[in-house]
Length: 198
Image 1 (cartoon, rainbow, N blue to C red):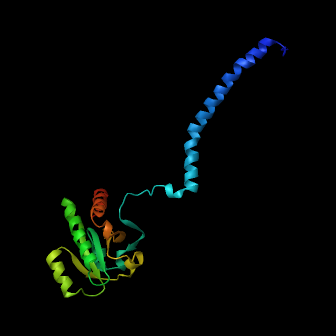
Image 2 (image 1 turned 90 degrees about the vertical axis):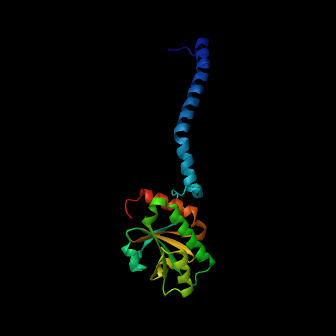
Image 3 (image 1 turned 180 degrees about the horizontal axis):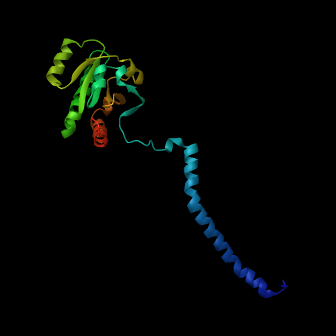
């Protein structure tokens, strides 16, 4: 039986107290290192979703789900390359001509991959003689096709826009005028690098 009145026992308890406290601090530190980041991540996910990264690096806007090219124009279902399509909803204004110019520059910037992308103007009725003259003078590679603008205007009405069609016949991304230069070039370079089709 231990004598609780023994002063030696009191001294041993007093000397063990700092060791126990230090052990607890070490334990709590290890637990916080292990579980702290998970707790912070959970709280951020639940209460601050705007902090979450978007998970994509593309500059263009992805269309989810994609629009089937067959709903737009037959010619777009017969592509053996990628397609850049500019819907013509009215006369080709200055912004329209600017986005056509930028798309031409982007194709030039693709270098050896230039022939992997085909440019189109999509109209619901024949283009004006003035626009046709402009296209023949400035955009000889561009193809004018007629089709149904409805599925594309349903995606966005903020024209002018360039829609990207993959070789499988999916309209899967679009670019605004502000993104139609270097940002679009970056996206296309990335897509063509990863793609084994078109």
